Figure 1 (cartoon, each protein chain N blue to C red):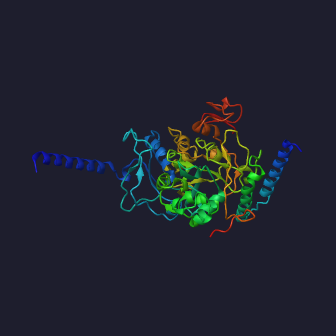
Figure 2 (tube, rainbow over the protein chains, first blue to last red):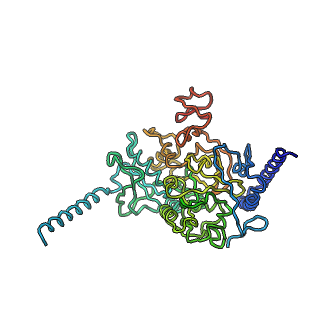
Figure 3 (tube, rainbow over the protein chains, first blue to last red):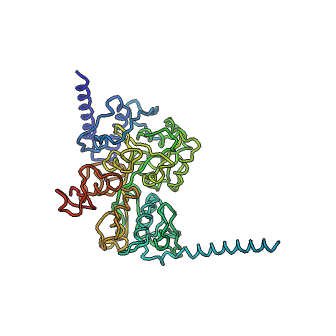
Length: 96
Length: 401
């Protein structure tokens, strides 16, 4: 597998994951918030490992809108913070 | 005491008395100002009060004096819901005739309120009202959803930090020092707002730390946050929160942090770059912490009781009003850093809620872009609808509808 096709596969996988996360959203706002928090944390910690450049061409869901492709002149910042209290599964612990 | 000394002292006393007399004369009674409209707004909306207030005072077709006080959004909601009058001396801006040199960067003037105070004609919440009070508004009060404003985390100019993720902010403001997030590991340097303020509540929804649980020093006014952050003794550890229209006026003192929401892969500034003013990422949903400004007034049969309130709310919302103003109201809204609904490409229904794609019924994206940067690709200038291949000519540009 060459680099190009590997990247394409990776992007497709990201898109699927994003779509899956979006499809998993329920109508209950709280449920959605909890799902987002967990998905968000996981996505955050894994972002660099997956492909921080991956973006969604035709966004429809909230998560896709956040990760939609932008024009080249838009400045995006990549950050991999060290969060010692993050749970092992990438989720957020309850507030103290 | 020599004669010369006595003369000098007398002259100084005279000057002081004269100054006091002039100042006393300069503070009019509020009800004496022409066509007064009393508003209670969030302090993030003061730039709009000044900018719109100035053109309204100078209007020849419908002069109005915006007389306003600033307070927390949730306090403002309760004020109009429960008919709490304005009792402190409010502010207003001078007309050009009164002070031609006055600029919006200068303080407003103050007028004297009557002893019993004055009812609030228009109240403002700079976030979804449901974030303050989940109940429906009382009968006789109507809510109008106005232009959007973004909120941001700020750091001192000398800080090397450029971004914050939602997870980081969760630990910083939800756990304080115990969150162990470097460099923001000392609560003494966290400058936040009190729990009635839109700035805190909107960002609270974005990072999922309830407003009452935030760690840091709560300030009553945005200007106090700005001062605390910009003058922090350890700039690397300092962080604060601010509405972006106030940040836009303070870029020489603090920097905004790009924000990465939960589930987002990269962090974005409210604007397309750290130095631009286009709010592109707010408009298209890449920047998550924003909320509509909501304008509330008393209504009877769904129509505002005070026609001046109806007129001013119409101007802020970008609706057609009669008589047509002799200024471009949308320009005032854009100038202060707000994003009119007609320039948005996304929307949401609750504070910190999901984003969805939005196509405004009467878009103004090209006009908006022309005011904050260069008009985008495909934006053609026009004088009338027939100048446009498709769509309509609105505010001098061909828009898609």
